[in-house]
Image 1 (cartoon, rainbow, N blue to C red):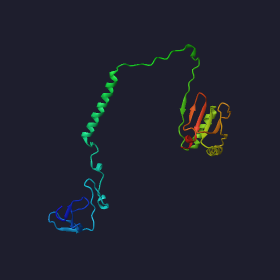
Image 2: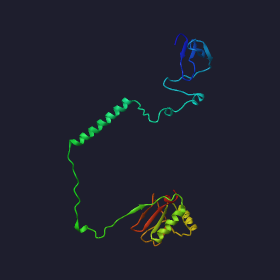
Image 3: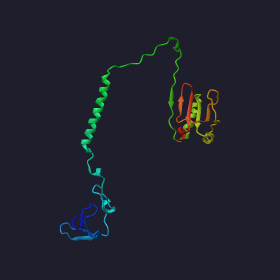
Length: 224
């Protein structure tokens, strides 16, 4: 800055910019050659940006490439290595302090072993084995094949839907495949004699209970 003139260099322009003032009023804005000090181009306005900001025009943006594209693939860049080293030292100190706190009271307390009770020994141990279902993802024919296979093995099958409307839709789809299934809002598996039922209920994921010969299939298993 000198007198009534301000010169500045901006990455947005190919030449430095000179602004001439008449008092507090701008008299002219122009690009100039720093070697000859002669005017190159007059401008009506210019964009002033912070020195730590970079603006790109539409024209210059077409020639820009991502920073990492020009780097070799095996290169490792450490941003502020001293800061990374300081963080590593702090973490190591925290780990050492934690270990030191545990070693200060170097005693290990174990819970007592469970006492064996002779009168509670079962002659017939009960094993509960559940297996998850694979999602059919809308492949209805695969579900029909599994239903027929389960019925042959005398499994009780429960198709769970979140609403009566969804249950009616599922019932109609089964009827199109020649399979009848009652739609029930209340269901008690022990009392039900049918092998296949559609029940209004909310269950996220279906499963197979092999020991009891029961299968639960959810609406989400079928259509998602």
